Length: 410
Image (tube, rainbow, N blue to C red; front, side, top):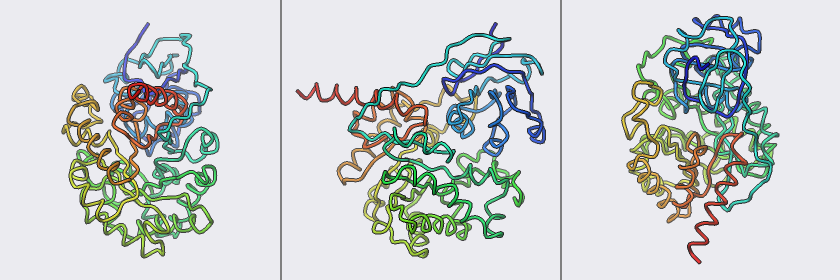
């Protein structure tokens, strides 16, 4: 019997006893193997949730950071149920199907979708996004590089605010430990290090956090490069970590600036990078993540300033273009990555990059969606950066699309 249905975020299935979480302090009570049911999951909870057999939430979307990381950990996660915390009873046995989003009472046998083991080699590069450094060696053989090292989870796992780590002179060291295993596993394949993009509501419970900014929607608030530019010592510590890794001989590392709104932010970031002793475009490649309509509209300005690559974040771009909170259940039906306005913008960015011999890449959830990936390849995308469990599937899909394009030509 289906108890409740939500949005499935992976192909994984799990059975376990229900553990309801009402307060964050109760995360300490997770013993391991339970199905955790809670109102919402945030990135600062992941160090506890990694012990769970599955996670079910009332709120949240498929593109949420928690859903993405749990997918990397192969933990089934179902979000956006609306009322799972009311319907599901504590200590009962349930089955969660991460593909369909169905939550069943009792034990139900469901066959998991297994990975494909035949490796395809499309012309479009298939990269991977990494939130969990420990799995780098496991996936490096199958991916053509890393489209995004999301170092935020490494920071949050320390339990300390970046400012606290900075004051203890441990911030650079923590970042180095989080990325050196990745660049080593992938060398000489390119690895793009994304500077911090931590939402304000994910920092409030860390040791050393000051009073919360109190943003109603942190997704379009104080995040990305604008946050780091306020505290430039933190950004400098990030760049110093990149320099240390570079000086170890890992010249495959590059820097990506996230959620950029204006060319002035990019210029400031480049100047700070220079101050650490690294020359942008010479010693190290540097690019931007197009996640706001403004950055897409003034792409020519970035090209004139100098960029080595463009990463397109379609989840945030869609949210900003359609004015739809991507974490809101109430407006979920209006959140459409295939909206013509979004696709037209993405196509224009890809073509502009091609005209200027700049690598274009789409990272995140869009790179796991077959319909979107097919369109991206048709637009001429240089690479896509998908989730670890989707690499082999996407290699096959992309090669098939490429073959169709070739057949049309002939």
